[in-house]
Length: 172
Image 1 (spheres, rainbow, N blue to C red):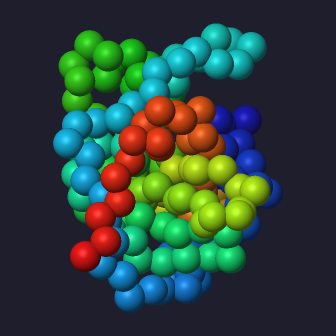
Image 2: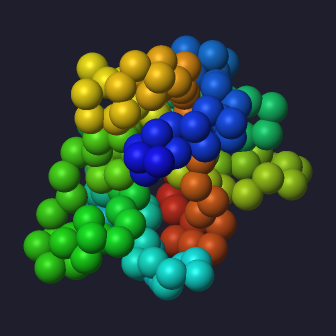
């Protein structure tokens, strides 16, 4: 089975299908600035896969909330998710290419829990799957990708405790 089809099917099953438009927008002037990229590099899984995940330098503005936390979104494509060959390429070049599907630099930011929440910090990004179907398995994959297009997905980021503890949120 084409690996892109499998990826899309898994996303369909796992995605809660929440989109940015579904979030409760808030009028806030809170933000934080990353002076430099914060990327964690680790090997995980049975295959000992090289994985790089994190945030690119820039300004992240609070723009929405849910019952457990708040969303800080960065400009452009600030969320980095790289696995295997793209991660190895990044280590050589230090260049992150804009993402296609789920890898590269993606739209999104950092979700932080509210005080008292049992939830943990996580990266969030917008799933961009939609294409003409020619590269992802044809009509069936195209239809499935349309179901998750624009949905939010999350990557746990609570392992970055020092980074999170030193994050300075500015309240204007």
